[in-house]
Image (tube, rainbow, N blue to C red; front, side, top):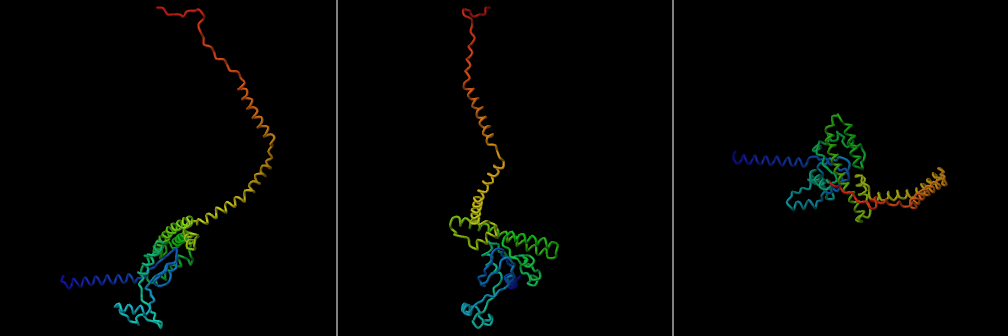
Amino acid sequence: MDQFTAVATARADALQRKIERQINQASIRCVFAPLFDMIVESLSTTISKGTIVPISEQGQPVGEVYLLSLAREGETFDPTQYDLNQYGIGEIPINPAPIVDALLSQYGAQGAIQVKSLFNLDVERWLGYGMNEIIFDGKEYQTAAEYLNRFKIVKDGIAGSQVAQVFNHVLTELEGSVNMALAWAKAKAEWSNQALKSGDLKKFSPYEAKVFKFSGVTPIDEAMNQVALNQAALANSLPGVVEGLKEAAIESKPDYGQIGAAIAAGVKEGIKEVMAAVQQPAQPAKEKESAPSGAKPKTNRN
């Protein structure tokens, strides 16, 4: 291969990779967050939790001053390209890739994901599936348990259908998202309980309340209030318990005279046995047997 052919081949490969990279960055990406809304800072907007959202190329508002600064830095500035309005405000396109990457870096620990099985899915097909309507049924889920239970219901409901394979892939990714959020929420809830106990937190905010609800962890202040309520209820019920015991004793009508006489008789017999043992004379010890006086001991003679 000559030099020019080798260069042409290398340039063609580089151009192909560049095109693929651009297509990849511009491809529609679907995101999902189970716990909190996600803030898209570059667009000054939010993405709602609890629903799958397709992210395509977005327009970022920019001012004429910013565009002129780009022109000074060597960028080509054509005002008609940005369709500036009377206030000198236009927009520049942003690919989905950097938007989604920024979201996942900020909210990934809380369960936010890109649904990979829906990557570059045509919008018409996306709308045709009606995934959000089928999976979430138009409801908002506050706990991990509610999400997981709903996903199981959907899996059972679509079993054997033509869309079962596509939906099952999506549901598997959503389950992983919810389980990740659950692990994060449990750790955060336990930390919040310790922080309140140590005094680092004065009280729980609505943010902590959502974390406790999602994870199923009981807030320490709620637990302490429940203990106090239980103790108060016990204190209030004690008079009734004592009165009930009194009434039960009255109903049984025990003969305290007979009980006392039986106790006295038992004590009397015990005392008599002790006294008898004390007063009994000691038995003299037996003397050892000895040989008669004057008798000589026998000896053996051989």
